[in-house]
Image 1: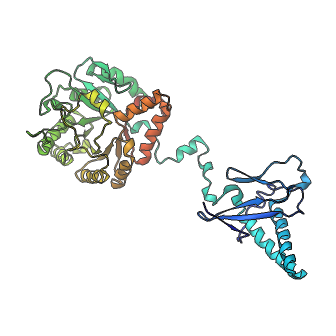
Image 2 (image 1 turned 90 degrees about the vertical axis):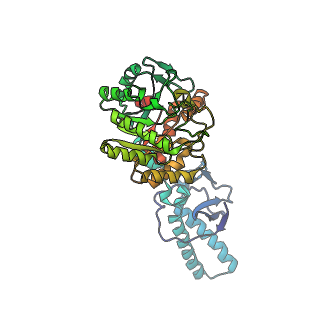
Image 3 (image 1 turned 180 degrees about the horizontal axis):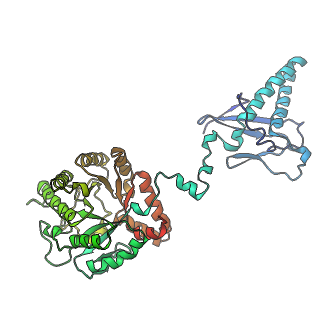
Length: 463
């Protein structure tokens, strides 16, 4: 940082003298002492730096942002010197040397001394504050977050249990409870296992779940995903059961075909293997309506087909259930490598190709903004961004575009698995990174988080 030395600088108000009156000490002040004032040109902040030529004078030492005198054991009370007297003493002696060199008259010297002292004292009383704070008073922030409660007040939004949605993988095998190897501490559960699992979580304050059906029976998958809206299938059966057993639990139903299609893609394909958008939208909207009629509070299409939000909204309106069914759009869902554990859990790995032609490219910020704007215009009630931690800018964009809308973010399976792997390797503490990563999502603009950490957060959070 460039530093431009100046000798003294005049200022108009004073605040330091009483606060810092005993900061400077001197044994003898009769010997020459040089005071250098420097200006930090980049920020217009000023500091006093003492370059003390008198070997008997305690040298100034910089400690953090404070310029303090080095301790000296032989200092006595009579040797103490206030900062204002220190500057005045130096000012007189410095002026004496200049006046002697010029051979000025005695009266002129006294007048000059007074003027010089006035300038020096003005500098001392105002900018000497920068000896201790090195800048504008408004730059001093530590007091604003010195207490845990004060720190919580600095956040625009605090993580609470009501912000969390917990993903559940519901198997069509009623008694299944299988650990998912690539997704730490997560299981596929049949309908007979979800109530015992959820009961303690609901008691701890679980407010919402999102359901993903996992058909495991042989032959249930086909090219059209017909099992997706089977009334006896895992999702619709679970919706009815959860509504009955946990009336206070908010139920979100993910809407997609990839778990139910024989090819693992998120819609109906043409003969050449490409996605038939119109047929896919028709099918997806039918599945969404079936889930809403079964009792889902919210339907969340994750397929990324163009126009599916409008199609679902129109059908909800036509059936007279739009007033009680929330429509959450996976508006900004990016393709990438972070879905692996989820696809292991849901059995939704594509049998060929990938999903890059309908999920957004990782660098496609402009596309994401357009998709968000489109889905808001088509009637989405909530916008979701997925994945979360690697797309905080998109969450921020979503909040900017949908200023008056809730924004959801899905911390996906790969993100969750990475954090677990890092904690297991001793890179960081799991609880700490869980909070830090989630608070980053909230800070970016989300106020709903789909999180596999939800069971732990229910223990870690008070509300």
